Structures are given as structure tokens and as C-alpha cells.
Image (cartoon, rainbow, N blue to C red; front, top):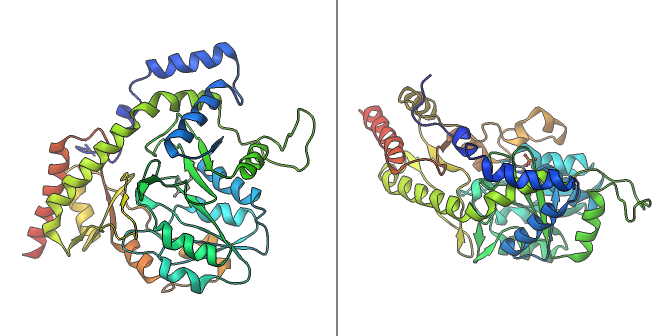
Length: 374
Ligand SMILES: *Cc1c(COP(=O)(O)O)cnc(C)c1O
């Protein structure tokens, strides 16, 4: 297949190497590969950008979630609420602590529906993990209000939402903590795996620094057994080079999204693009640009024939996965999520696309429905 428009341009994304190698070289010269100077610098810069007191670099976004749950003492017998349409890592992080993931259906904008949370709360419920999926902010104020009333923590899965704004504040700074990922497919990414926890809670930050580093409170003493999950100093050096350009990348993605909306609005309801429905104004970073379409299989085939690569994120909701069988959910439990799983489509929306590329994708979609309707 000769693609005209790829879903991601990894070659473009990683073409520029020199400034990265120069920064890595400084780490190699110093030899401070673990918990080194560049990691500290990256943590401080992220804390300022995310407007939180503390950030803790960890090995992956999954560990950012998992270690925070461990530090909050989540364990077997506990329940943690999240959305069934998220990436598998959110539910896995809960399950790996021994706790039970409890799913709550989502809204049109792919985030957990605050109106449905309360009926999922029971005596074992300890917290809520709203997911800022696709870069759209979950509706944090109503979620926090429910959490407060029931004495639950809110841990924001912000893996797809570095610098998404809710009420003009970066997400990840609202709950007890926010978890971020620097996987190569996230907007702010490293050359491999990386993650980070953001928090304003100094006691939690202190615990998390132990949880990522064997629990070592001094060179030779531990009070509890923990993990080795540090963000490599080399990866922090990579992220530091990308960081100053992140605002431009986000702006480009927002521009792309605006263009797509302009072209595709006329196709409603065959093509549906969710509107912002949060209680406070929010601004997506469009980590993924996800539309909801009729006749999806036929549309995908048509787009492929025009050299356009599209993906479905994610076709199987978590409650329908074999891994979740033991939780006892069945088809029909989360109708909005299930309908979306059958209709969502992620369009190419990266910063290397030209205005013409966006137009080509949009016009191809319009053409498909014009033909299909005849
Ligand atoms: C990517 C992602 C994660 C996991 O991050 P990793 O760095 O890949 O471990 C968790 N949650 C969501 C919503 C994600 O998109």
C-alpha cells in the first residue's frame, strides 16, 4: 500500500536528532543515568508548566497510575471507578494493585459521565480515575464534587492530555494526582518509554519518590518493598529538547481540528464531531481527532483506497475484553461506550500535516457520503 497520508509520521517526528544527541551526550559525560540532573530539570519545568508543586518522573504512564494507587494504599478488596473506553493501562493499573476496576459509561465527548458515577459508588469504593481521553478534558468540577461528598480520591489519567486545559488550568493538577505518559505516540514524548506523576500533595510526592526507587529512604534503608521505576535521565534529556516546542505542536493540532470541523460539519449526522460539554470551559490538545461515523467499515475501505490511513481507538471496550471477564460485565452494560466503539474513527491529525492534507482527507470523506447516499 502506498500511503498518501499516514496516521503518524514517525520518520518526520524523529528526523531531527542533533539537539537531542547533544543533550544526551551531556548525560553520558556526567554519567548520572539514574535520577540525574536532567531528570530534575525536566521535573521542575513540567511542574511549572502543569502548575503543580511536585512532579515525579517514572518509567511509564502505566507506572504513573499504578505507583500512585500503591502510594494511596489501594489494595485487594478496594474498588476504583474508571471509564470502559480507555486504553487498557488504566484498568490494568487498578487490577494490578489487587483492587477491582468498576466501569462507568461515558458521554459524547468520550469522558466519564459524572451523572452516572454516584450509582457505581459502594462501601468499597476508594477513588475515581477520570481519563482525559483523546486530549478532551473529563468534566472535573462535577467529578470532584462527587468525590468530595463520598471521600474518594480523584486520580486523573492525563496520559493523552499534557497541557489540556479545564477552566484555564492544566489537567492533572485538579485531583490528588495526575498521571502522564511520554510514549512515542503522545504529544510530549521520549525515545522509548517514560511517564510522570504531577501532584500538589507533598506527602504523596515524598511517598512516590520512594515507590519509584526501591523504597530507599536513605542509601541503605527501606521501610517497605517497592519498585524500580525511574524515568531515565537520558529520556528526560530527550523530553527537555521537545518541551519548548510543545505549545506549537498543540496549536497545530488545534488548527487541524478546526479545519476538520469546518469541512465535516455539513455531514452531521452521518459524521458526528462531539462538542465541548463540560461544566467549565475546556481546551482539548487533540491527541487524537476522533469522529463518530455511519457505515464505518465502508468508509475505512474507501479512505484506504485513497491512500489515507485511519485507525479505530479502541474497537473493543474494556468490559468486553477477555481480561475483564472476571468482573462479570456483559454486552449492553455501557451503551454509549459500546455504540462509540462501533462508530468511532481516528483521523490523521499530527503536526506534520499540511492544510492541503487535511482538506484531502475531509474531501474524501465528503465524497464517500455523496456516493454512498446515491
Ligand atoms: C498511553 C496511555 C497510558 C499508558 O501509558 P504508557 O506510557 O504507555 O504506559 C495510560 N492511559 C492512557 C489513557 C493512555 O493513552
